[in-house]
Length: 257
Ligand code: CIR
Image (cartoon, rainbow, N blue to C red; front, side, top):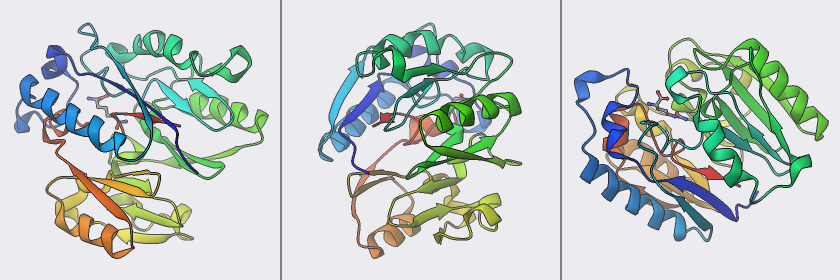
């Protein structure tokens, strides 16, 4: 795997009204969120990818989390049908952007009653693990796997019990290495990988991204950072604490392909 493109979208002031499971963390502060977003952009640039920056969409508070309305594979793109009502319209905003990179034949859709959020999809080579969550349903997964198989790729379902999205708790950083936390530590689906177990108090830090042999790690998760460095990766650290307040992290903030 090597990525050449990344798509990100600036947060809007409405980010403070994003969906959250952790209101006790307070609302994101726009000025800080923008600063963090610039830092994220610059980290990506250091990984040798071409970064497309989209403008904020105030009508969709969670729209900076571009990972959810689309999944991009090496064979084509899938526009999802996001499972949260307030986010569903984001699919129509991302589609024209995705079409800059793929022709008609290579853009497919998840359609109702199927729902799916890209945050529930984890790519491991040509295999895609798909979390069945509050956002992603059985029919969405069925359609998704059917599209993958049409391209010679494959997928499998992973039922979720605790976390919002699959990648909230498990992330693949290539070379057979997988960061696992909470409910994913003992899941048989991931037994074959070299698992890096993330301690409970650093669970948020499990959401790292691999971008061309550099792993970007969230700031403030020293055990995760050291474990990734000990595996021999180059690392970059980015503060995503404003996004954490609305359940967002490093992977949600970009589409990488
Ligand atoms: C949401 O609840 O949809 C947003 N507040 C956070 C989305 C995070 N996205 C992701 O994990 N892929």
